[in-house]
Length: 287
Ligand SMILES: [Zn+2]
Image (tube, rainbow, N blue to C red; front, top):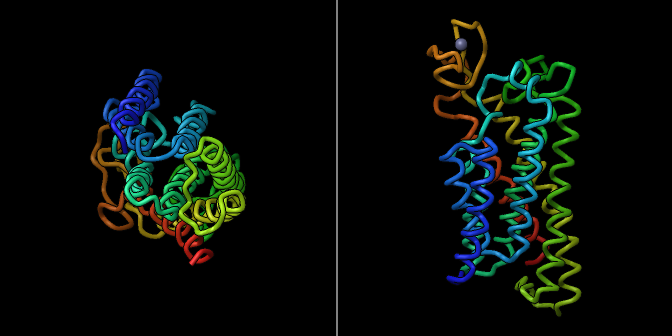
């Protein structure tokens, strides 16, 4: 990590965070967190790392705007408005840690862990945003019983397809990132093979490891969402929700799940799982 990259990264991440804050995609705390995530990612990684971050961030902002009126009507869990710092760190914290670890070790497993975390975050975000717009009622991933639209743990066919598409999308961007790093001369996979075959081999690996990490992470997110995530109830509105207080301002009571196991904590665990699986696949195929 050199000072020049930190300055360039800060300028770049600052511009995007400011824009996202002005566009109400991020709250002020969310913009500050995104600034830190973007700066560290640029300064730690190759340009491929930044590409993966943007491939997660930009479509998720765009998707959150699709059908916003309908989502407002259906969702009151507060996760589809402007993202705050906790939400930014729940999605990007694990990946940023992996990017920093990569900067100090140049161990390819950290690079795959970085992208695997974003594959999980992307899969989950696409699944949630598209699934919320599905006409049919979602069903619990565990019991298959119908659940309210927008609550964690519910799955729909369009949402599941979107999840898979999001995971594949990061796999594709991973391949482009690897090619870019190779062209720019920053390609450093740490494998003891000559460079050109290694580039192709790592690209094939990315296409396998990143989508699998992403789908596994997003599935864990749904399972934890259904089985263990804190679910609350607003008696004033007679509505299930995930926040306390409810958007209406009244206090809510916990009806299910572990206290404190919020959507943010579940997202953090899901990205960690995506990172671990992507890195683990690379490790298994290369050791
Ligand atoms: Zn309420």
